[in-house]
Each structure stands twice: as structure tokens, then as C-alpha cells.
Length: 82
Image 1 (cartoon, rainbow, N blue to C red):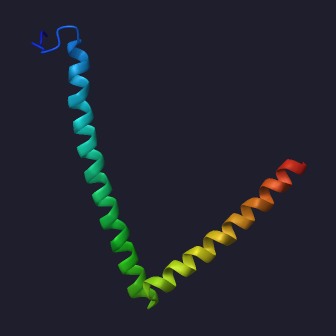
Image 2: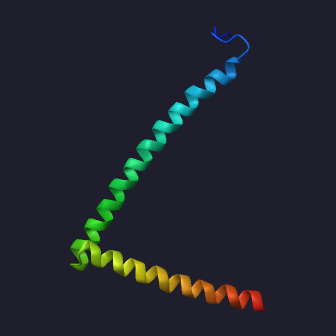
Image 3: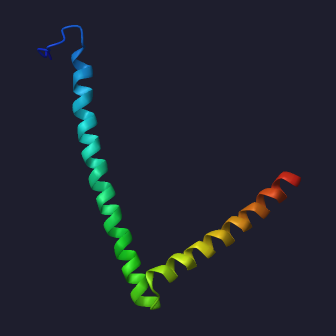
């Protein structure tokens, strides 16, 4: 396929690359949008089930993450020692 270009030294397959990048950017935007919606739905569901405020849920998640990290640290130390 021959593409008329304002830059004759610029290969046509590289011109098509810009179009592909634009399509991928729009797909990533909408995937991010769906992700935000899903996370908000999960938080709303958890709030209704546990009767906790959003701040309390964040604190609980933070405590859980700290406990997990401490457990992982112990596992790594044991693996290195052995």
C-alpha cells in the first residue's frame, strides 16, 4: 500500500504506527474508566455489607497489607537463610 506523505523519507508503516497508538490509548482510557467504576462498586458493596465507613475500610485494608508484608518478610528471610 502506498501512502502519500508530507515527509517522503518517512516510511508509511511508521505513519500507521501513530494511528495504532491512538487506538491503544483510547482502549486504555476506557479500561481505566471501567476499573474505576468497578472499584467504586466493590467499595460500595463492602460498605453496605460491613456497615463500615470508607475511612474505616481503608484502615482495615492498610492493616491487612501490613500484616501480609510482615509475613512475606519472614518468608524471604527464611528462604535466604536456607
